[in-house]
Image (tube, rainbow, N blue to C red; front, side, top):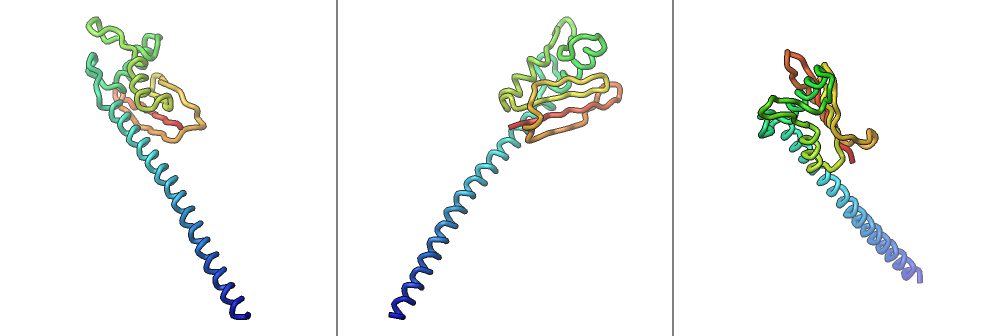
Length: 161
């Protein structure tokens, strides 16, 4: 009888150990999936942001032959000197008035769908395109930008959840 009880005890210990290993591996597999999903979402967000920043600084508008950021800077500089709107710039009779808000906002909406804010700061003034809840910011990008007359400005790009 003593051998039978000892054998049952070892059997219970083995079953319990196998059960604990199965639970451990199932838990690890479940958390691994969440980590992979989080890593993929983070990478996708970084790639979207890199694409947007590249477009803002390098792509030129066909009708002005200036980048999006240059148009925004020109609008702020012209708006502060003429005491008018800071999001519109006049490029002469051939081109006319360019509403920079109508150019930048649809571009950023295509990529980030309402989860962004772009602020262009110059020594003369600043203008913010879009808006975001400051508590939900997950990524921020800041860069110094050259302004005419050897001055320096700043671009702040915020992305939220």
